[in-house]
Image 1 (spheres, helix red, strand yellow):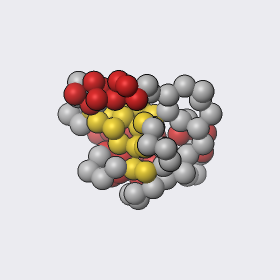
Image 2 (image 1 turned 135 degrees about the vertical axis):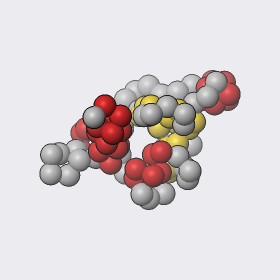
Image 3 (image 1 turned 90 degrees about the vertical axis):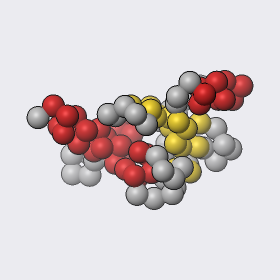
Length: 95
């Protein structure tokens, strides 16, 4: 998956590419991508065929949605970067 530069996902991954398992039979209808972006969602991750895999809201403390399960490859000893970022956002905002 390609992580788009300048996004929260890129900041959290710290790399321009990531490998994620995708189990879903659904996805974002490409006919609606422009409408979603025009409405404020930023596409921050794309699959190998250019399909949306991560979206986010830049002006939100932490709004990041994925079409894969980051928790599937996360553990207490090695948390997934997106989950670690979420935990950091929550603790920083609500301490």
